[in-house]
Length: 114
Length: 115
Image 1: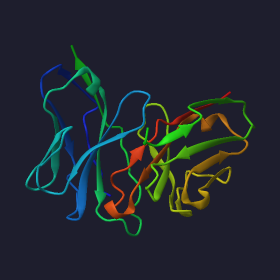
Image 2: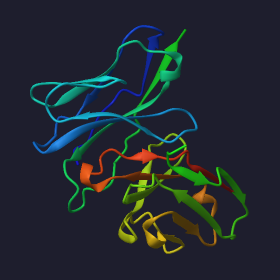
Image 3: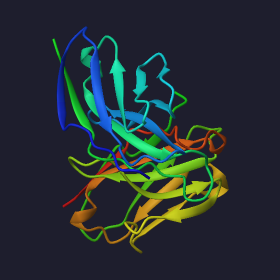
Image 4: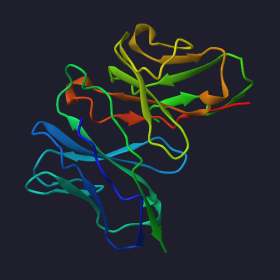
């Protein structure tokens, strides 16, 4: 799986949009971008994933650049409960072969301030 | 609650003792994973099951560690002769294979402290 690079930490004001970047310049054509988050003392939580088109769900939006070398997770109206470590993971699609695990980096600690 | 549950949530043990953790996945999920997380790091993969079959073990899983998933339902992770380096959060996750396994649902974890 391709390696990802994320900033160590970011701050965001409550009610504002939080934009979390991720660099994955070595991504392959069959690799998806996944985002998870981990609130303190809880297990990771799946947020969203995408291949090349922008994706949106009830939690967030995922913007992937045309060359797929980077992406941005957008929380449109951050709340204090969004304070967490956000992980960007690149993973081969499908469930065959060795494609079973998630490889987490250190992620970005997003702190939402009142 | 229909999520992944883990028991116990916290375990303090003395070095050299054996410990066992339990994970109950989401009922219809056929894949189950164990991860370990130390302070300041992201979770690291340990092992995974598809139904009752253990299909992969990480090199992180020494011979002191053993995992089972009898009948493809709940799973247990046992650590024998615990060492201080085993202190960590042990996370369980489950998923449906037909969705590619990328959407994994995690439990709250078991925090192990070895004194």
